[in-house]
Length: 247
Length: 247
Image (tube, rainbow over all chains, first blue to last red; front, side, top):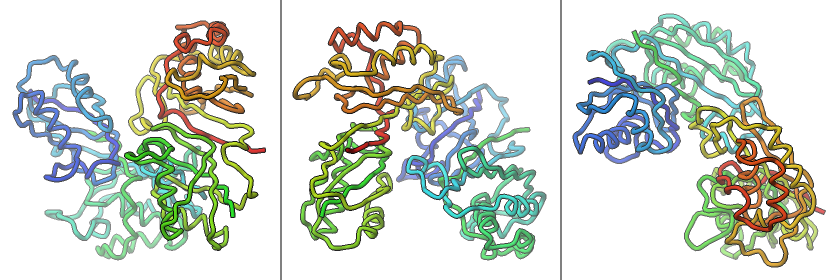
């Protein structure tokens, strides 16, 4: 039986999603709990994609296969009881035998949270990126328009990437809004993302918002296909994998 | 020269404020940084009072004496550069030679944050106490009225306390309000507090808010002078030492 689960995690104390020999990882914790439930058998967990060290997830989606015959309704409680308190399974259900958490993704949403206040907030240090200088929202919104659509996003892909094949991706929408707590939330939806793409987009939009670049500059950055033309990679703690939609 | 500083800290990764042989403490970190600045000399830091493991501070106040001749304006930057990122000095200034961070306290404010939503919030788990059942604010507000004033608060003091002298304290005000994020904030101001007093008050008010006790019951709890008559001690992560006023 194949199960599909939606999970949340606080990325602060993880060396990222993907399992690795040394380092506390989300996948590692999930597979350790599943091994316990399956009397030591290794159960491979497949996610919609990785997230880096310090990056959070509100709607990461995973699948795995199980031979256990416990009712689906009991899975949620069993997993949440055994998982550490910085991972939580929000929903779990039976999926079709050919459902694949990575290959069947239709669209993903990432959110990036910027705290745009004079003073930093100690209690939010792991959950947003603090920018003390005032950001001009309208400039950022103008710049974002150039990114929407299907483009070769080579300029917005980490230089040390492992991307096989082309770097053409489709961003279906970007919205940038300020909330009541002086947080600027950048929401980026797309059918696929390159390594560090949202963080480089954010870093570039921040430079536009600070007045260091013109909004139109983004068009040139895209067509240059040159990572060094884009802005700095924004830090991980502001980034959330928010939602994954499937076909 | 005596310096007075207002400090914030995230209590999550501290074994409380007070220095101890094994365990990461706020006082330990402060004194280690000051020892470095004073070429190994031990500089004793005195706070307005201790906070327990997991309890936060937004306006803790400390004093210490120094023989260093660096301008006061440079202290803030020096300390914040050397302190870990879960302690922050918000303000530092010269105080009179007889200022005492503990003995000169006029009033303190504590705040207790309850997240009153159906679902827990993974990202706030260290910063509030999650209560999934609906709380009746008016009942809690009614109950709180009995606590305001000068009383023997023996019923609201941890049984394993080290309190010398009487347990008569004065609460000058309690307010209980709900914010836009479904957080209920209990603000308690008083001239002095017993060990775990705010957490036991909160635990008792929660039982009133859930309908398990009547608001008038608080009057009986106070006059019983019996810890076992009051509610459970609310967990530490919802508590903030918010502000300390001095004469």
